[in-house]
Amino acid sequence: MTSAIEDQLAGFSGTIITADSDHYADAARTRMAAAAPAVVLRPADTADVARAVRFGVESGLTLAVRGGGHSVAGFSTVDDGVVIDLRNIDSVEVLPERRVRVGGGARWRQVVEALSPLGLVITSGDTADVGVGGLTLSGGIGWMVRRDGLTLDQLRAAELVTASGEVLFVDADEHPELFWALRGGGGAYGVVTAFEFEAQPADGVEFAALTFPAEEAESVVAGWAAYMRTAPHGISSTVVLANPMAGGIAAPVAVTLVRSDGEDLVDAIGALTSITAPLSTDAGRRAYAEILHPGAELPSGLSTAVRNGFVSPDAADAAALAAARAARQPQPGSIILHSLGGAFAAVPADATAFAHRGAELMISTFAVAPEAAIAAVRERSAEVWNDLERFVTGAYANSLDGTSASAVASIYPAGTRERLAAVKATYDPADVFARNFGARPASAH
Ligand SMILES: Cc1cc2nc3c(=O)[nH]c(=O)nc-3n(C[C@H](O)[C@H](O)[C@H](O)COP(=O)(O)OP(=O)(O)OC[C@H]3O[C@@H](n4cnc5c(N)ncnc54)[C@H](O)[C@@H]3O)c2cc1C
Image 1 (cartoon, protein in one colour):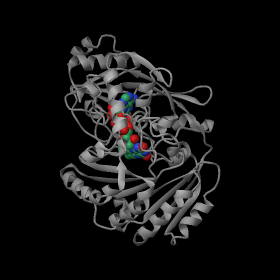
Image 2 (tube, helix red, strand yellow):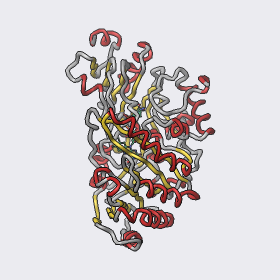
Image 3 (cartoon, rainbow, N blue to C red):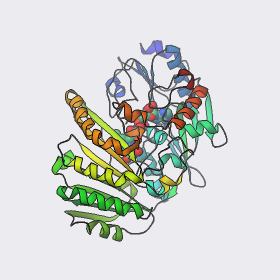
Image 4 (cartoon, rainbow, N blue to C red):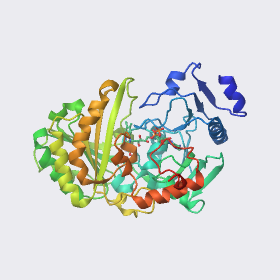
């Protein structure tokens, strides 16, 4: 089978993996999902990606593009289809003026390793193993979100292979609508072979992890939300409630603070510990690499239930309290609050395809269960959302498993979705790149 595909892929210099290849089982699955593709192609360079896309289109099979393989919806593998796995296109090149060119298949660990010695950072997510591709194309909410905004706000240009196999350089001047769509529209427009970011200075961060008694959840989240509303933008923060790994509904309320503007966290810790006495405090200076989770593959046989929503300032207090109350009831996983605002909010809602700039909070739920039990877990999670949904105004594509139609529908407000659909109709009218939550082509409506 491999040799027949080789013939069709004339000139392809990367790796072709089919069911009869040695590493098929590994190559078929991602960090988060299992499937049985017809073939996994690992291109060696951009020209190979173009060959792989043309092969995918000509074969008529469904195409899946894989960056770091962390899509919780399982988009980066597909039964009976063609996977373009970018793992070998992963260089990180530091250019003049803090520009950084990153291969479309790189992971954040590689970016951090290259930039930390230079005192530079590109705000990412919280996990080193996650891919640059998927995280950037839909957002990127991490420990510097209030200082630097989303990861996509640092994107200055991209190299992209379109559905016709053409290689485009895309920035604010060249294909500006496509550049707008790449910043929030997901992987719906082509395969990004290189991202060009502007890195920011960061010489380590101030870090604090505080825990509080579970029974104080409501007063802690209310005090936290009030503090973060006026906190310096150099501070980003999350609250994790009901973490099953820390005791479920009895788990301490875990508040993390990260400060990246060169100042300390003394006032912030003082403000939070004045709400109620903490159970534990761990604070100090850290390298950026140290505060990222290494990440791990979801063990085979397990599945995830993941959902989120953005909350505007007028609903933030009530939503935070509802989340704290939900965390004290039997429910299947963690409830996580992200504080937004600052640089995240300073970007106009229509400047990129990520429109939810007015949100003060993001609320997420995250549960893991054996595949046989995941439907029941999702039902219980949906019950939590029955209460939370009235507070949310949109959803973050990167933290959705795709099972909530209403959450998926709220990723893009109507105006953004229409504009994305028009870009899609120009660059991928046949919807070759369909494994994402992006808008479908305008002509398909
Ligand atoms: C453990 C874990 C921690 C996470 N933490 C955070 C966090 O802190 N902050 C946050 O914002 N998100 C976080 N996420 C969500 C994460 O941003 C998404 O799962 C993201 O899509 C992963 O990107 P990836 O490249 O690893 O995934 P993949 O599964 O490879 O790709 C995801 C999507 O992007 C497309 N894609 C990927 N690369 C390219 C490319 N180069 N060109 C075109 N399309 C591409 C794929 O086709 C797919 O549709 C986390 C996820 C996990 C599992």
